[in-house]
Image (cartoon, rainbow, N blue to C red; front, side):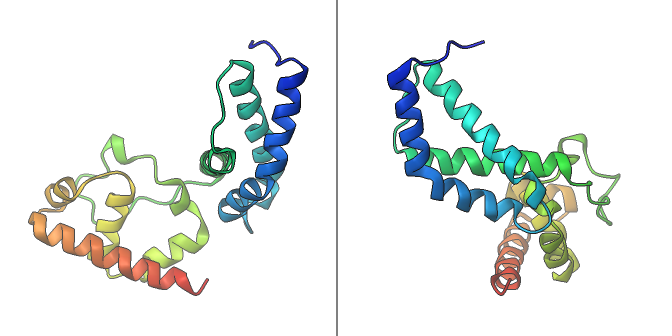
Length: 169
C-alpha cells in the first residue's frame, strides 16, 4: 500500500479536487447519466482514490482539469462495461466473432447507442461495430470480404450517420 501524503499533499489534493469538480462531474454524467446513475458515487470515489494514489506515489498532476476529466471518463466507462449486460452477437459475422472482439466497446452497451446502431444500414452497422471494437479499415475489409476502400467508405458513412442519429439526443 502506498504511503499517505503528508499535510501539504493532502491540502494539494483537496485543492486539485475542488478546481476539477466540474470536469469530473461532466465526464461522469456523459457516461453514467440516465441508466447508470447509480454508479455515480462509485465512480467519484474511484477517481478520488486514483488521484490520491498518484499524489501518494509522488507523481505530479499537471493540468488538473484535463487529468481528472480523463480519469473520470475512463473510470466511468470501465464501470459501465462491468455493470452492463453484453449485447447479443451481431448477425452476419462469418464464423462468429473472434475472441479479440468478444468485449464490446463500453459506450456501445448503452441503450441509446444500441438503438442508433440498429438504425444504420446493415453493412454500415457491421463496419462501425467492428471499428468501435478497435479494428482498423484493413481488418474490417478482411473480416467481411470487402475491399479496403469499401470498408473505409462504410465506416465513415456509418459514423457520420451515427453522429447524426445521436445529435438530437
